[in-house]
Image 1 (cartoon, rainbow, N blue to C red):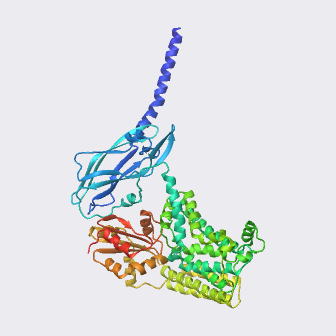
Image 2 (image 1 turned 90 degrees about the horizontal axis):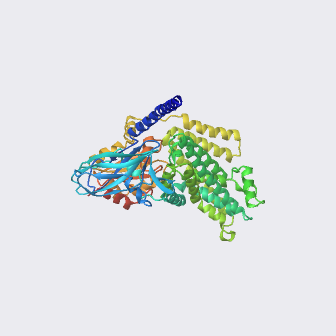
Image 3 (image 1 turned 120 degrees about the vertical axis):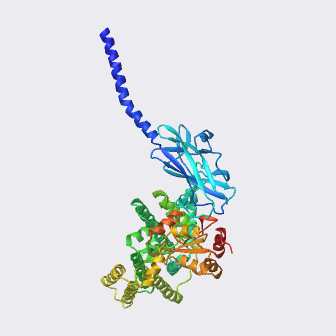
Length: 596
């Protein structure tokens, strides 16, 4: 019996030893993870000094380790108030009142039947302070308390010590973190509401794109479609043509979406209209527009693949129309989209910026609605009853219109050649233009040799790649160096007390050229911009420039035109609409601190 008891005692001792041996490393590892501080926080500022600001928007930057979370405010469950981030100010804090937290949208999960909201990763929580006196320094001292959770929850306290001196305000490197961060109390449906809002903005932006200066080169393609529709009177022909053009538009927008998703997946740089920064793309489009012009002048016919057109016929149940009737309609819709994308429109820039920052489903959804908005004239024509649509009868006027439309496309080609001369070289532009003229002559004289035409087009591409430009003079090199965009110039100018007007534009952006011509070169606006109090910083995005692309992304934009005004009263910047007006520019300069 004694032996048995001893065996039991020995077994128990061995079990305890093994348990301690196994648990100790686990406990130690968990303690090590907890003691390594799973999250940290500090106060950041978008400005270097107070300036004339009576309200300052700072931010708490949380760096939360992977796998850890911190609780977000939960209006539906007051029990979480004790664990959400809170700051307890010390008596040495000075020069502020009315502290307001602007909680960003949080993630959420259902735990034991309750909604739990949380933040993870890098999170910025904006905090607004009412400043008592901008001429005195803003002194902030306190303790930030919050709870970080994984398997266990760890209370954390970070000391807040921050001083914002009085003086001229200039943006800091951390300013974009706050500018991109939205505010507002979290709501359970905020993400869905935001997406629905962006869908509406995408549709409206696509619709507005039909009336933007950017579409001036493609008016010919649109008129060409309606001209061809009026030429045929048999059943469903007009619907087939509307459908073909609409499908061309939707295909192009989906192709854009797929391209953006692919670039994002490999970490590439993305932006709206960036294809116009590539001379090869412009050369391709110039060749295509030349072929369209030859088609309009009756030199040859453009046909869709038979399978695609027959599929359309099958869907609509029309057997009278062969695929030849749809010649060019699909392609005119597709190329109209490509030509409409150099610039952004109101609402369009916001929707694109939102989609680029999200995942695959958001990008596809918003680009579909962009296409629906841009294709509104076509799908409206598709669904309208036949007796609602009145087309003019074909006649001699159509021949004259066709001639004019063809020359309209050639003007578009000249515009593209001008852009190529700015991007690549003047010699390249002249040689490509000569080859395109040769293509027109080949068709006009009836020499429709496929190999000859293909060789001429291939030569255009080769020239755009290998032909160098004339050597630059010393003065031209100096001007090119001075034109390089450097965001640091903004801070330097603000430190000197100046108002800064930043203009991001490109040679291929027609809306930019219209803004310059009608607004920025207006005598009243030009007088202000040339004032000693104002510094104009130009950012030319005609060619790819990663610095400009990053500057746009810092402010949630991925396309141009983009204009922003900085000043003592607006160190974070005042973003202007894509379509400038004299009143808006003058008002922004005054709001930023401009005084006569």
